[in-house]
Image (cartoon, rainbow, N blue to C red; front, side, top):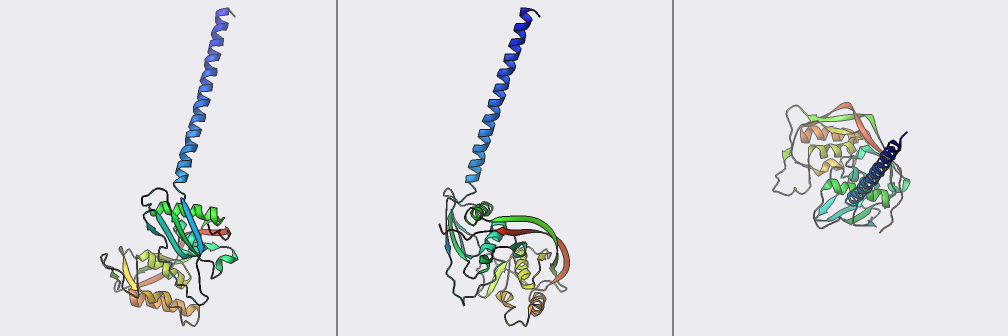
Length: 268
């Protein structure tokens, strides 16, 4: 090999070494940039500050069944949840129904295992509900040490449909507050409440849009019932008589969130 050829080979090797080093540096720079972007994004999904305090509950205080009501209240950059337990927090954070959450530690079933949560989101502006749910998920992980398993199962369900004769519900005027003794919600929210009453997932198949007023008594049909079957019978009768709706047995694939572990939170 001539001296010129050897020198050319060395030049090529040096050029490749420099190029390789440049690529490695570029790769490292991209990794650092990505980590910074992820850190900024993560910071946007975490409450700036959050206070968790036990809710004072009397032994004789009734606990209303409100699975049809969103417990998250947002006012500017302030977020509040009142008188809420572990299961309710999981429902709120992951936007799922009560029948989609199972398991949990024994302490979570105690009547005094309810909390009042007051949190502040980053910045001064109002944060959307989806971002707040992400922040609640982080709160559950960090403060409650929550561990979840997610899976999809085929379950027996009821499809909520319009009965013969049409619906009897009245659309709620957007400009007027809810009437005393009445609940206000969408058909999906009504289905969530009915799920608790009949002990089986109820899926909205009515096709009815909008918001409706319906009697608050629907949440108390189990009072005075002889047994669980009597409660179901009363509920199904009320669905048809008061609402002009009915349920049809079916099966559906439902996502289930199983609480595998959680700890009682520190207050602050």
